[in-house]
Structures are given as structure tokens and as C-alpha cells.
Image (cartoon, rainbow, N blue to C red; front, top):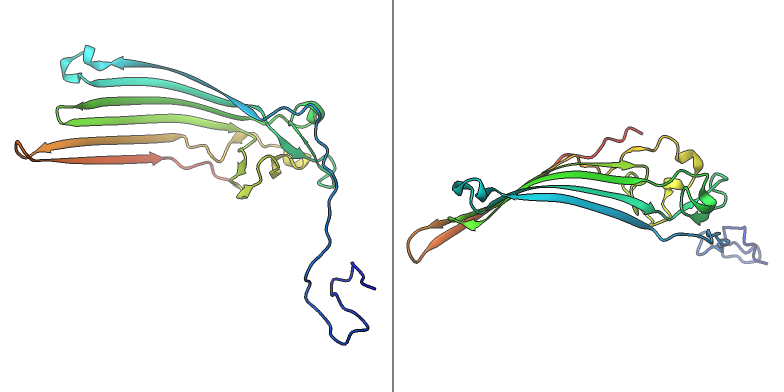
Length: 212
């Protein structure tokens, strides 16, 4: 005579009443998957050049400088989506296949890095770099920092069509400026003793501010 809708789990013929819910019966249906689903992937392009400054002046020997450009972008993204405001879901590639009516997932990273490197000589060494970068798009990745949601490939970015409006812009991982400095010096006390000391500095600007 147990009624699965009666959450009190009370037996009318039993003088002992159990008021605490111990368990519930719950189930779900199958989630359709795009038969032409493409694996999630990304591309990366790196271009750079380096100059040996020692060829310009003997005072700059063992010192090198370089400039590197890095670009990364998403090729395919797998996400769960809904056309009926979360009543039913399906799995696909946003902007492709059965999800062509959804916006394509974008996550574009562009960065320029200027660096200096000095090999250990004349009692000191150094590595220093400055990076200017942009991270833009409508897809933060497998982790959604805005809500601390860790549901790889089924987060809420594309759950509802109403959530995909006005999503393009700087992403949470966008740190526009980054500075790194690692240096060390060797202090010679005498022929048998020396002291080595080093300094490491890393600094980065904060991410974009979320107003909603």
C-alpha cells in the first residue's frame, strides 16, 4: 500500500510514523546525440623570432631577446543544448549539425610575448618576459568560472537559447598583462666560498568584471 508520491513514508495502519525521507525513486530518459558529432578540438599557431644581442655589442654577450605571437582557437566544442527551455536536452556541436540554429562556440586567445634571456656568465643570469594577451569569445571552457560549474561538455553555456544572447566578449580567463622575472647572482667571498641568491617575480592583471 506504499504510495511513491507520499514523501512522508507514513503507513496509516502503523502506529509508528516515519517523517524523514530515506530514499526517492528518480529516473531520466535518454539524451539524443548528434549522429555526426565531432570530437572537441582546438588549434594553436605560434610564430616567433630571436636575436642574439651579443652580436651587437660585447657588453651584451650571452643576452638574447625575442618576440613570440601565439594564437589558439576552438575547432569543435561538445555541449548539451535545449530548444524548449530545459525540458529536454540533446548533445551536439554548437553551430553545427543538428545544432546549427545555436551560435558557434568561440574561445580565441591572442598573445604577444617579449622576452630577454641571459645565460649564466659573469656571476649572474636572468629570464624576463612581458605578455600582452586577449581571451575573447562566448565559451569559457570545460570549467565555467562565473558559477564555479565543473561539468565538462554539459555546463550551462548553451543550455538555453535565451542564455546565448549577448555572450561575446572578454572571457573570465582574460589576463591582459603578465610579467615574469627570474634572476640570480653569485657573490664570490673568496676562492673557496661563494653565495648564490635569486629573485622570482610573477605579476598579472585581473580578469574582466562581471556586472550581472
